[in-house]
Length: 154
Image 1 (tube, one colour):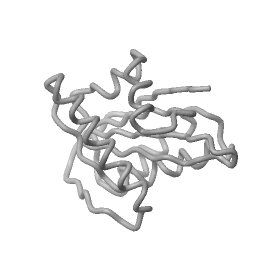
Image 2 (cartoon, helix red, strand yellow; image 1 turned 60 degrees about the vertical axis):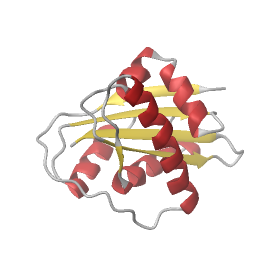
Image 3 (tube, one colour; image 1 turned 45 degrees about the vertical axis):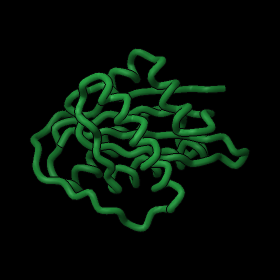
Image 4 (spheres, helix red, strand yellow; image 1 turned 90 degrees about the horizontal axis):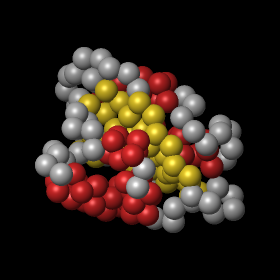
């Protein structure tokens, strides 16, 4: 079963942003870098600016993917506004925040493909205001992949 979801956060002021990488799994960092290339190629073909990876966004995306995979929260966007607020607490004011989720896609490329086949998800990915992003994967006990991608406008 392949599921996807999307959510929009809040609008605030913008400021500076740090894009350093903390201690995150080398595999997840590699997934992010490979995914970002594909995502930005897609955005470039549509005349949109490239998105920049941010590790603080990845940390929040990973927490949500893990919560869904461990069934401590349902598959969906519960807690989305809190994720955006935690990102803002780390990075300073942000102007916007968005999220897409997926379950079951074996690779980030397949998750991207399913998001692009959904109008609401594609609108998040094509949002011209977004500047930074990260994607996270966490597998459930039975191996089902749970994906979360968060976007911000900084």
